[in-house]
Amino acid sequence: MTLSAVKDAPIITEIENFNVVVPWPEEEVKAGMLNRFNMVRVRTDSGITGYATGRAMHVEDLEGVKETFIGKTPFDLEQYLRPHLIKCASVEHALWDIIGKMAAMPVHKLWGGNRTEIKCYLTCVWPGNTDQSDVPYQRQADDALNYQSKGFKALKMRAWRPQPLDDVEAVRTMREAVGPEFDIMIDRTAAKPGWVWDFETGLQMAQEFEKLGVKWLEEPFDLHDYEPHKKLASMVDIPITGAELDNDVFEFAKIFSEGYFDAVNADGHICGGLSTLRKIAHMATALGKKCIPHGIHSTDLAGQLQVVAACPEIPIEEIVMVVPPLLPQEQWRPAHEILRTPSLYTIRDGCLQIPQGPGLGVDYNEDAIEEYRV
Image 1 (cartoon, rainbow, N blue to C red):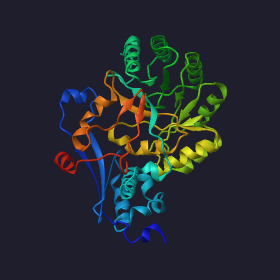
Image 2 (image 1 turned 135 degrees about the horizontal axis):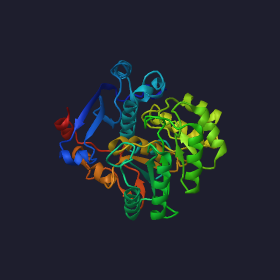
Image 3 (image 1 turned 45 degrees about the horizontal axis):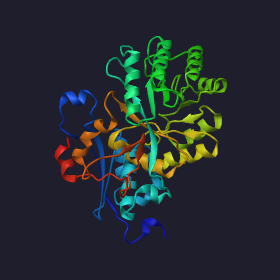
Image 4 (image 1 turned 180 degrees about the vertical axis):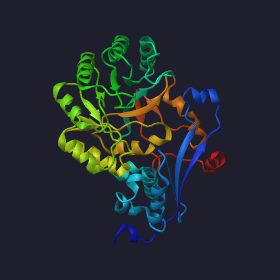
């Protein structure tokens, strides 16, 4: 007998995708407070409702998911993962939320996980120019030192400045402030700065960052131009990471088999969902690579933390985008207005505490969601 045939399995009756905007002072939103939520809600005939927030989905993809899943049970998830859910990851997260709630336990327990916390790092984007060229090196160093004083042990910063070696000096200033034990990572973010490093620049930057003890260099070249990343990884000791925008387990299988990166930054929404992220993490371990999930923030992080709790080989989780000098706890404070619980997550001594409530561990207030729905 399949799970779909279980007598009491709930039947999906409705799948919704809408925005929730919590009223918040405009100056605080401009400063980095997160008050907008792209929400998926999946209702069942049993009264159990699954929630997830995440990235926007194409209307046609969402309609395909509705046609497929309404009238079926959440347990049909894997069967329809690649045909439909791979493009609508937030729905997949919400289905897992239902399954966990049915079992009255967090999803990671269903997967055999027992992790209660994960080291986290902050990806900081300073106010001002997107390339950070107007941010003094000392300000970046001072903010890193402030986060270190609050218990955080790692920070990632952009290397987008028009003169690449300026970012080396920024890291040097930061390293002098925080000392050798604080992890610093660099995100070039492929072509997002508007121009791509040539190979010689990428090699020079990797070598300079390596001297400064940078933990890894992320996507130094064009996003899907894999061969330069592979070549660079073979020439330097600093790990070269990427693939944050890649989708589907088969794409990651190719990335691993060809040795394009030392570690992949798979995203629990972009890669196709929580089931896919788990598979990528296990595949990385089997092939001697690492999976270091790409960061998200606030309620969007809930599902990915369940995967992290079930995959002890994942070494660290990213929180992005943190706007100094705000703490992430300050940025996600608006989320408390749509929760029943008093706080979203706890960060203790640089580690995110894994939610232990049923499903994805986030207890939403239905009345508040309806009040702030737009």
